[in-house]
Image (cartoon, rainbow, N blue to C red):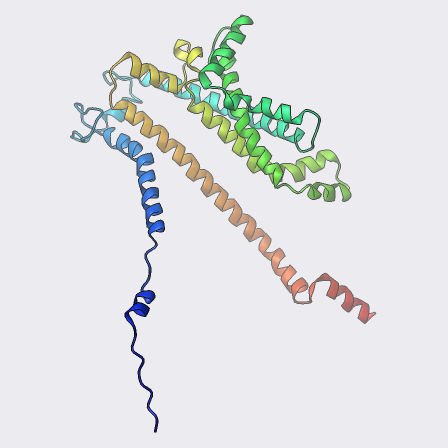
Length: 323
């Protein structure tokens, strides 16, 4: 009768079995948390301070009681010291000029990128000319645009001068987005459409545009967002009641005492932007689910008649054997 002696476990093997702590992972996680705090804490504090009482200042700590007076002053001009009228005009101006700039940037970025689908003579020079606005400081771009329109004796306004400067500023961003879209675009899809009898116009309308619309929409978002937040390229074009929202905020901070109503305005614009993004994501999710549900019967038919029979080649072979 033989007995097997138990092998003693050495302390070294026990230490090896212990799970090692990945310090690099924890350090990167801590850095990520600190980065998020540094990025979002000012916005959170701005929202908190916007609910201060009438004697609340612009610095921490919070001074109560909690009130909505600063938010009310954004919409009710009867509140003492309210800038509701100027803010309302500036907000509408910023909204409309942002939408217009986004549409123009998307159109120009798309048409310019179409030319770069094929190499042509001078393409490298044309690329750097388009990127020139990206490398030019915003104030110098505004100054050059202002001098150009002054030479043409065109009066300054957000629609005649500021719109052009912001479109020039947004074109490089939209152009780079469209180049990224075309780099992963398969040209064989258009060739297949032409082989099936579609002309160039129909191929462009029913094949090309549905595949690259996300890039066009991204270029629109860049143009609209950059124009909505622009200050440097519009500072030389302000004309009293035709100011944009950033110019109005700048004027309020330079000409008068800063109050928590500006914090309320910043929080309101941030919430509006986040709401638009969330709404767009919800619409996209619903559309994708609807498309997936509509294509489910097609997939079931393909599985029943394609994969179970071994694909189209096997079906043809079975038909040939029957004949």
